[in-house]
Amino acid sequence: MTINPPNEPALRVAVVGAGIVGLTLAAGLLEHGVDATVYEQASALQEIGTGIGLIPTAVTALEALSPAVAAGMRRVAFESSYSIPLVDGATDEDLAARPGNSEPHDSKVRADPGQRLWTCPRATLAAELLRHVPPERLKLGKRVVDVVSKSNTGPVTLVFADGTTAEADAVVACDGVKSRVRAVLLGASHPAAPCQYAGELCYRTLVSTTALRGLLGPLADSTAFYVGPGVYLIIYPVGDRANISVYVDHRTPPPPNAPHGRVAPREALVAALSVMGPSIRAIANLLPEEVSVWALHDSHDQPLTSYAFGRTCLAGDAAHAATSHLGAGAGVGVEDAAVLCKLLARVRAKVAGGGSTAAAGRKDMVQAAMKIYDEERRERSQWMVRSSRRQGLLLKCLIPEVGSDMAQMREDILARSQHLQDYDVHGGLEKTVRELDGRIAVMEAGMLHT
Image (cartoon, rainbow, N blue to C red; front, side, top):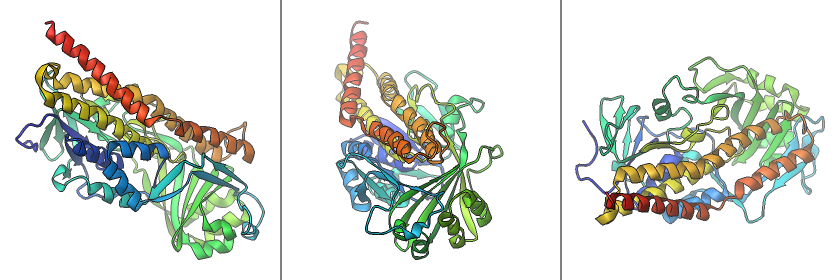
């Protein structure tokens, strides 16, 4: 049984995965008149993770993709300066004694004052994105088991575990770190089919802000990064509670096929904090009996040689899964969505226009769009993966030439933050559309001379 609408539109796009990137892409495609449907393996949507931050280039990309979606994001997110405050978490100093009327941090990485960060809970942003994707465009309980393209002119067919199928002219897989589509396209035995263990664990928990203030003083009232040997913490207040993420160097990989996340006893986190100074070690007294712990995975060791596979492509974490140290994974995925949206909308307009343009054929135009997307996005997104891995090592004082030197750490982080922001979103979008128009023109000329 197929689950596509009976009336064939100019271009049908199947988006696999209803995470932030998938919903962003679908919302943009629908606004541009592209027939898009999202297929999600979960039977109910439930975003995991504590929060999400959109870097300035991602906000620019979102505005280019859909002003309405960008406006919705701004309604539910909080704007803040783009900075990274650093504190020596291993110091023997009583951090609570630092005065509140002066700069309490040891160092602060500040980007250009005009660069702003937009943050909100993942679930909140997902709910806002769903306002732009009609319910009939979202199919739940659809776990992909195969992607089939049997002919040069026929559609791409998604085969689902429930026995149903769906047809599309283009497929974009945004199904995350554990991407099923990536494994199908590469083959289960391919080394890049699964993401690889990044050599670290992340513990997450919430504690009372009031209680934390007794240990950290004024530092507890704003976000800060507490660096130490093999460990660092990000602590930020959320109302009357403080969110704590603890990143720990841990080279022993989890067992094969083990879940990335699990519940751990508080003693495990207490042990991880044992190398820190007394103020940070004292946080152990505030911890609940159980905390969540995540084995971090990324694509650093096995980067893909292409994100495009004929008329199917990978985007977001499915293409370039990264650790969270740079805070840019979701934002770079939104950039992916903007490029794909503009390219596929262009294909749709060309097909709908008919005439000599249609002679090039949807298949060839879609394949050209996918190749151009790969050419535009792979270098930047894989740099992000490498940079995030390095930043995690840096904040855990594991870069030999930097160690715990705050000044060198700040300069290293600042250089990569500036490189991350030095991306011309509008220029990239215009370039990709021009390139697509040029390739379609060549296709048309070839068709007319045969």
